[in-house]
Length: 318
Image (spheres, helix red, strand yellow):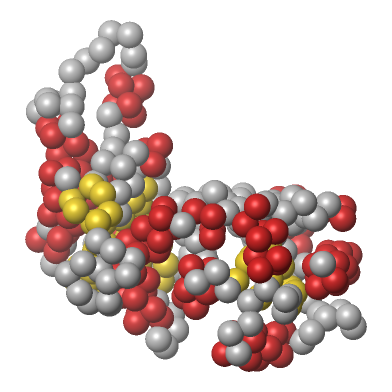
């Protein structure tokens, strides 16, 4: 769906924005809420440390994957927990530092005098001070005549523009957030150690089933090849969406490998979540996406459904 089509269907949709700049329409960012915040460094530079540990270590052990923080990473963590000092209305619930980004949970207990975005900006200012001191080795930015003051200031920023926020609305969402934050280093380390299991695959359109090496090996290693696909709007050829989960669960419980086709493409940084990640890591799940990634909430078209069904049948016959 194009931006023009989206706005024609919903006149209040407004301009499309990247996820780091998008906010929940109608939400009062001063009111009592719980948020999960994500921020990335400029150019995804890994300033905050490195992931250590073992992907084979048991959950909760000292060797379970975690981040060894750099001095800047420790300073950023201190700034995060210091939010409560400057804003007693906000409880800092949790923080998970990663090499080039962070995830944190904030609980706004009482109405704020200014929006949450202003609080986040204040946090970024404190982090930039630490960045200038620890990385640039200067207390105050020096003026460079070759750049305008605004250009120089932008060049010294630690963070990429904006942040992503998710709001707690559903039962069980808080526990899922905590698990996601705690296991994030594990997922990153697993992807680094076994990149072949998480290779982005897009070259499927127009009958071109030239899989990557891992895709071919996946299909050849298992005589039972099951191909499913996911959609939001059903056709007569489709498996009902509710039954898809049941079938997937039965296949996984039976230790069958699964090839899963989906409409939305994958980014280079994409990692499946939850059970899907564990299955990919075990070599039991291959996710294929024939179209480019998008952030819009699209309804899959009938032609896409039919094309995915054809691909599934071709895969099953290989």
